[in-house]
Image 1 (cartoon, one colour):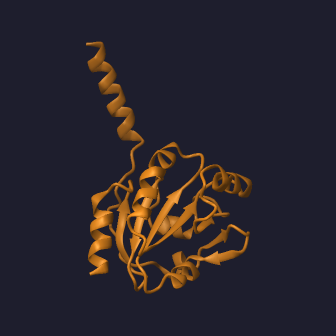
Image 2 (image 1 turned 90 degrees about the vertical axis):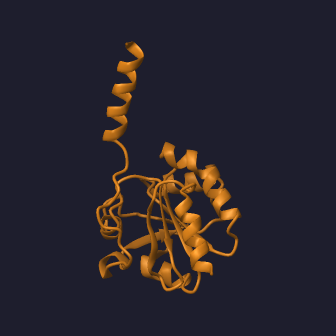
Length: 171
């Protein structure tokens, strides 16, 4: 009986804090979302549009993460495996660390300095994250060669739809 009660409590608790799949799976970005500013590792301000323009013509995986996020840190080894098995595509990491100092420490601590990382200095709530219905991290998106959204919503680098989307785009 005690086990059953514990399972019930954990199920209810888990469901209330789980990621919620957006009702609309978007395939493009709004003007406001594209204008969203982030900072690169050097502290220079860039927009989402500039990031996408740098990767135009390539398949791009966007990985939303933060050094304080336990789920993100558990997913990092699998995210690295996804990257290693797809050397012909680009990966960009968008950090939701709470401060510039936290962002820099996370890059160092989790060996992310050699990767293309940007930080939302405006915080979690901003035009880009609001537009893509970001309600939890980690989150993954696949962007096609024309900067359209090919896979809108994935919560794990092990989601088989990420790889199948990449494979379809490379055909």
